[in-house]
Image 1 (cartoon, rainbow, N blue to C red):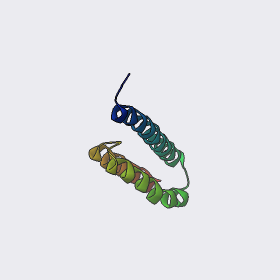
Image 2: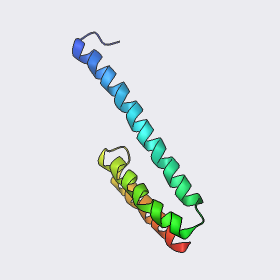
Image 3: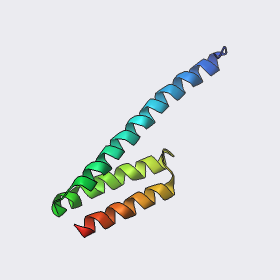
Image 4: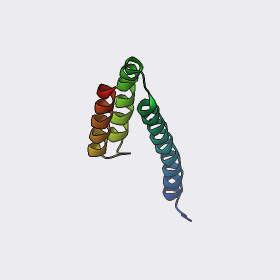
Length: 83
């Protein structure tokens, strides 16, 4: 375990950030899953911008890679257009 004051603070910060990133990632995955399970096109079109926003925030915070974010958005757009 760390002994220096700054190292102890770093451990606390990392713990809090890890939990926060985990929460954002899990809630976004749930939103994506709900969008994929949606069968009504008009409801899916309404949900799409909020899911895109969540994905963009994950990419901005480096929780997911920017290319993964682009791929997710592309696949979700194709899914919603196919409904």
